[in-house]
Length: 535
Image (cartoon, rainbow, N blue to C red; front, top):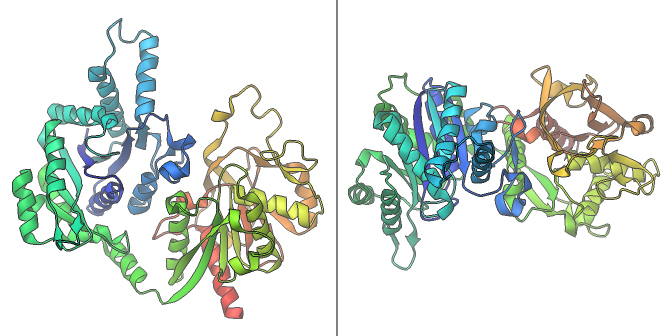
């Protein structure tokens, strides 16, 4: 069944468990081991799909259509492998499964309890991921912090897994904070000690401890943590704040974390090969030229809402050896009077996806400004749909053109629900999710940047381009350059006489990797650099 690594966190949330988990995954893959990664989230929502970005950042989508936690984006970008529905599950889904089984009589009239029924369901999910993936090592991150009441069943489940599979097949890594007190000029270890003590009270003794700190951690502090938390000093690792998150992999390798993991599991593997990763980090550190890319959206006060978009922009910049500075533009504050001022420093623009009408008029004003002033722009999902609305209103003179998401009485529904698409179905389950094929015209500005065919892209949307308007759009210079071959849905639109005015119905950011940027973002950065050369 493979080996199991469980990563927990204490003291506070947002300690970077996902980055540590991703770094472990990258390290083990570099040693020739196959891995599978998963995130267990303790909240009661069935999945993150209905959560506000203000609550949980972006919703990440897998090829097989799972709406998942944003940490899966880190997992995929670090390890360069695609994950599945088995990579994320919530307490809500666990309880839903157990209640369904109880209603079906699967428990033979027994009293259904947290232990053993909820914990068994959690263990079953973890083991199913191991069996289905066939991976050498399964890395499981437990969301939240030790002490959260909703986390208790998950911690109890992994305690039981160690009891069943023994120490040589399981490894517990605990992330803790070392807060720095400026008044005394010290790093304090007590919060870490209490976190490990709390974990111990639940029957789990960590094998490794990762110390999150903004300051240098001395050998004395590591020795103190090792002593009071009862771990080997070689198993106390330091994860300092870094400017480049991908550097964490190299920091963990420098501290021989991968060696210690392999020793714990009695695995004989080649030494890690991170030449490409080292080259990536060095490239990022030595970027010379800088460009500004504006993200125009309504969640710009919370950057995690557009995390994958940011990383995709940066990765395309790495491809051209340029640093991409992100300009955060709140679309609710963009109007006709200030648009030129707001975007004066933007070399390129991304209008990302989203749901709901708030902030959309500011996006439409942005789109018109970029279209008329030849500013390279990429519209993603709702961004593409609003490109169609703006073009219909201001080029085709269809004044009330709109998406039926915002105006179901519009005379010109250029974006709509397909006829009978969701008849009799609750709209909560009607998103087009996951990977769908794409046929891209060779005349597309993006086509030269694709390295692989056939093309498959990940979707997360409900409304579609209205095919009744295809001829009208194309006759006025808006090319329909990408089509789904099976159902003929419009996937890509782009303006003919423009450096780069491209919209895609899918989310290309989900398939971008730091060493393998996505074609749509490469195209955007290429257009920006060409514009700067011409100027």
